Image 1: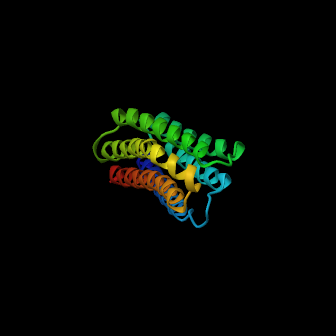
Image 2 (image 1 turned 90 degrees about the vertical axis):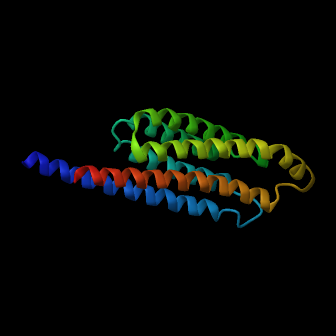
Amino acid sequence: MATQAHHAWSEVTRARALRIAGIMIILIGIAAALLPAGKTISSDMIGGLLIASGLIETLAGSLRFGTRPFVMAAGIVTALAGLLFITNPETHFFPRVWPIIGWLLIRSLILGAATAETSGSVRLWTAFSAVVDFLLAVLLVAGLSISTIVVDVFGPTRELIATFAWILAASFVTNGLLQLQVASCAEQTRG
């Protein structure tokens, strides 16, 4: 009886921690959406957002069961992408875009693999998060050819920088919503 009570308490605690992680990642997404206030986005700002999101996702991943290694790997990849931005700041816009494309593609592959280890609505949200990251990477690659001309002629325009910030925001918010869904499922399993 005491073991069941302890298990129910730990599920409640796990669900709360996952919910807090989801909310924090969504807030980071909102911060990313607000980035294009100026003409450029600092590598330190991008890196800081990626590191914060990656660490939160890694901690939340440690609370998962079947997908723990996948989710933690996705969080670590996110934090490493952020570290790359901080340790190797570039003065040109395009060198900043390629690590984001790589990060999105790697995350989409990791989360795609994680869908095999999940079920129900968590599988759906994990697949959705993987597809969103993949499509965002494709969008960045497709936009590079047009953007190259714009940047060559005008420099990194406010609209181009805003698009970049919105791509980060979309990935973060989708990931936060995934964490909230996992929290919801964790709450349901205790009852």
